[in-house]
Length: 92
Image 1 (tube, helix red, strand yellow):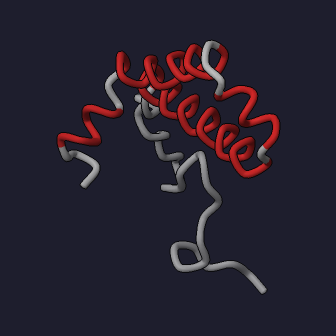
Image 2: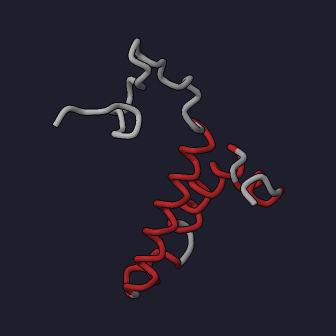
């Protein structure tokens, strides 16, 4: 589902930029702004739209972290997590 054509289209940087900044133009140059100031539900929906479109734009530009996984230490533990009890016996 995440690799479907609609998702790939939505996460394209140009589309994400249009959703993020284009909605500002629509908000401030139409009567939508006055409607959202008088209707609390529309106001919260507008906030949700800006939050989600901003997150989508940040993901489209930055994307997932391309860093390689953390190397293992000499004991075989990962440097980013503590060892689990199943891989190491602990004295009690």
